[in-house]
Image (cartoon, rainbow, N blue to C red; front, top):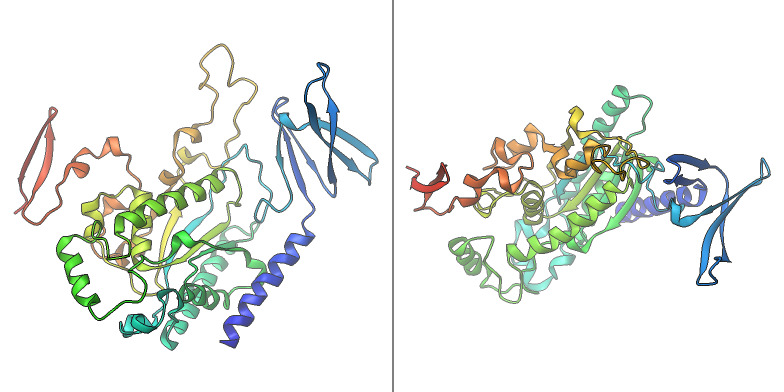
Length: 395
């Protein structure tokens, strides 16, 4: 308990220190297409009245005390990034910079994993890790550190970083703390609690009928079955949609550097629903996937093909001309962020039931046969020939 508390405190002190020391402001002028970087500048806002006498117009005034230069720019023409918004490197929002990896980790072995009666007297969100679970988390931290060290060898000019998203449940926080013990404080650029990453809600304290209820879920279908006073897998899917939208928006806005590893400490079902939403799995495909083992990393790696155009710069001056408005738009705007990641082979092997076509995002319009598969035991396989849909027995 003391080790976990000390490690968590180290996160906070290190992160706050870096935030306090950060004084860099990125200012980008879109109208001129240029970029102005101002170091050690304190921004202030003044109001001026426009010529028509209407509402005051806010302007950002910046003063460089070293060179005694004053700059005044209309903030409406800027992509202004305040200190503390970006994580790690300051990155212009005109670029989509893709983090190197997204790493999903189911918490280490918990008391509930070895004794389901623990849920009868302890709130689900307060279930702790076992001693074995803490060891698993520490081992995962060592694996992650080795991965970062290999990244540093391959790209010496970059500093690999880690940003944590963690479920508010105790076992997830203890897992994150155990992982962090193997990392240097400066490797961790942020930790955010995300309630949307919590475990499926089984309905407050679980009574002795839970085994019967879970058997009923297996017969009904794990995705659509709703626990009494709790959630269904479909409910978790809805909140995971919101979380992924927010996370992708942060990525697309350049909030993370290209050497960032995003680590999500979560739960088994939530992890699978994340992958289902990210890669557009069908319900039938989700149903055949089982939980990964405790504390085993499931890794989505950035695809390095040229078409991802990681650091493409849009031509703001010409993209809205009289001609084709999309002609000068960077290619990366046509490729969704989710398409730029794929599951590693080891991660696919850790997800029993996962197949090659489930390891990358496939757009809905490209997978009709997958979408129309009925996905039940006595059902059939769908095929499309010349627009005619037919099913045939799978056996």
